[in-house]
Length: 133
Image (tube, rainbow, N blue to C red):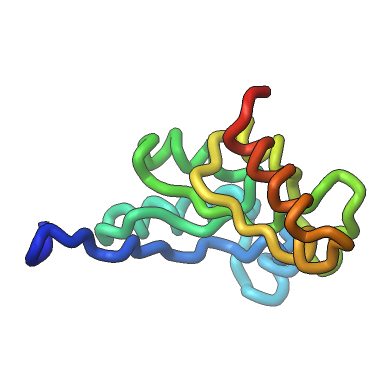
């Protein structure tokens, strides 16, 4: 532990941004192959380096937990409600899918900030993530 029993902050690495497509990863970043393979490689590197988890899309969270263990955290942006625009995001998912895939933390921006009633949207997402299915 740390002095006075305080926990250290969680240290999270980024894998591939949820706005990155396979084509962008291959052509712009010069990384061949599938996004999933790159994300898993980065997640394993982060775990080996002693980090607590990674930022990834909902679609990769389950595979990361399988590769790195259930205690290795997944932080998942690119969360959109079913009727929201994807905007610049490529690999998006709903809060319900995030829960189903075992995501540890979700990052929700525009779905709340652009809502007519942000509090109601937040409370609906909270119920989806923690309430009864």
